[in-house]
Length: 205
Image (cartoon, rainbow, N blue to C red; front, top):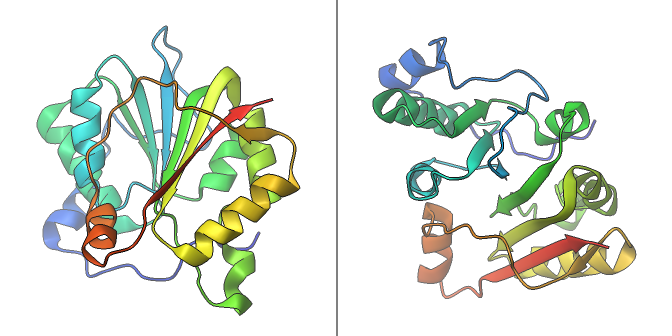
């Protein structure tokens, strides 16, 4: 499996290590999806967990499963859980593709905000958004479920639009999922750099 995230890790603090070593109740195993009458949202790559944590608190009627490969951001999400004990948050530290392939239940909403753009042409195959990945996502959402992708990378935007046209599992649609989100660190950086932020909302055909 080609890795779709870079090797950046960031220096872990003692606090980060403390929460990474903790057997927190929010931690789930590969592919685990809690059974609940509430709608379930999968957040792929929540970064430093700042906006993600706010989203969990604001949307308590939604179950959140956060999948993040980077240790630092993941540790911060675990720390947030331990301090607030939200009943609607579950976390998995690892690859989103492996998690999705192992998942037995379907999601109401899957969001991917500011994935690694891999801007160099030779690294394009490492981009998470691909024809095959969108096909996988379509199998993991309910009939009226949606997928949301947000990026400020012009190169990645062109790539995403090409990929959407190359497959027939998901189509562009109006966002109909009632979830609010705060502006993340990456979103804010993109705005400060003057980048155009594009949001792609996709629905199953």
